[in-house]
Image 1 (cartoon, rainbow, N blue to C red):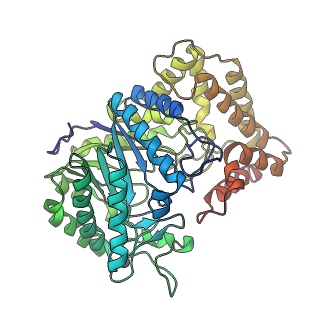
Image 2 (image 1 turned 60 degrees about the vertical axis):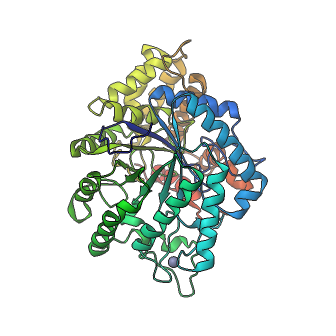
Image 3 (image 1 turned 180 degrees about the vertical axis):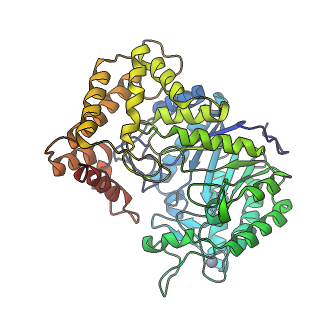
Length: 482
Ligand SMILES: [Zn+2]
């Protein structure tokens, strides 16, 4: 059973969070949104993935009911009907493997264009309630329902503020419980805090539509707004359903960093007097849209130690948008909750030895060289001269070529160790070529795009064109590497 009193048992909640939203589609993420397009997963694929994360040590499977689904079209059209069917199949297998099923959803952002409905307009509030009601009827297997403020979306119109988000979420939480009386509510503070509510700006005539150029304003920090809204949350905690936990990071910035004006720790301690708290620190494992094999685990483990030191966190999320490529990140992230004092390099060695025998350990020292882009949450600075960088990738390629998968790995991995090795080889070769003496950047850009993001060539322009920018950034790094 889910605890109703704060357990404060660090690491007891270990959440696999697969974000497969429309701006994060790629060859290593399930396409849950577009039937007849690439990257669809079968029920078998999903069962294998669930087996893998269960073996790694996760005990919650979390997904975002992203806005294209959280809409009338998502409820009625074949893509949404198939989504709900497959989600229920995944949930049943997750339950067999001892995982709880968690859905998170933005309070009010609905539809493929990421339009935010205003809870202070009666007909739009009615629509918000309709969508929450319909979706929580459709997915009776849910154990946890998370409400989060936005990203994308949030409302600052019609005097909407962070307080509106808190008050309306309480109403939604009770509505959810009518359909799912056993469910836990997870209420999220994400952002500076409460992303966008009252601080998101738009141009004259703005009616709540998503406008990329204004999204950054949702991060505008104002100490007074923070104090007032967090005090309001604390005051209103007793009005949430009794089984409610709170998602709040150590700091109110995008990397969850504690300290300074944005330190969230006093609030975390206050909330923990009555409620279980977990982090929703999105910045630790992969960042967004920088699709490479990741290796950024010192920060991950340091953050876990900071969380544990506070003495009240029960766990949190481990984010992925590339579960078919970054199995190591998932393995490390699950272990970071189980054993925050562990050495991440040793764990990586254990992982590779598990897949490829003792020769696999040779891969580990090279993995950090994929972290050339200082994207969301990445603090590495790779400063090798071009020639030396190129040499590293030649060595890595040779090591990967010589590996062979073990017959019986000590844990299940999805996809197979051999498929994983082939993917790593693709990246080692790509990075070797792009760091060569006179690479054909245009051709390399195209080969990377084809391997990673080809689905976007078949889709209408998304409201958030991050994938193109991400590929340009990666190529640009090597164009300017001396
Ligand atoms: Zn509003």
